[in-house]
Length: 113
Length: 114
Image 1: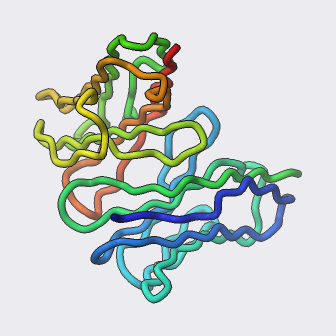
Image 2 (image 1 turned 180 degrees about the horizontal axis):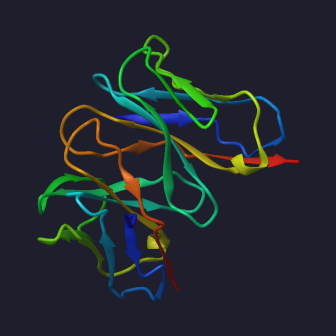
């Protein structure tokens, strides 16, 4: 079945450090790919998405590129802030049928000043 | 506009009881999905409803059921609660069925089973 594998952490970085969170997927067809962020005590917020190969999603300084050849969607940010501390989830949605999202296990990021 | 609202925010039950969780989608959204998020894990898909019909079901036992009302709000019911049902239950809504429709999540209901 469809699945998502991502770095699990937890990861602690200093402010202004570079961030990479790896995400790879297994799916039939051509899924849409997403990064969601979850702040403490809250639900999930869509951070960015990409719907086809070579698409780059970006938002709030975060970027991820849909790489079909490596089945990957790694999240990057050049300079993290304390406010980026949260749990990050990679997810996919397969074409057709329901709107089911398949999530990775999430990675907790803490950014220290 | 209000976001996705879920009630209650917290709930404590004992084994064997049943529970009903409620979700109001964003105004104009017709699709509602439910997810279970166990502590330390990613959310797991339970159900999706669109225009009051079930459009998807995850790998959960028959103790889990849901429905969608004419105003597009939804209920998730869980019978014969087990300790393992302790989790954050998330509701998500989207405008319509379609691959380019983003899903918006509520803050969830935290269910604890004693």
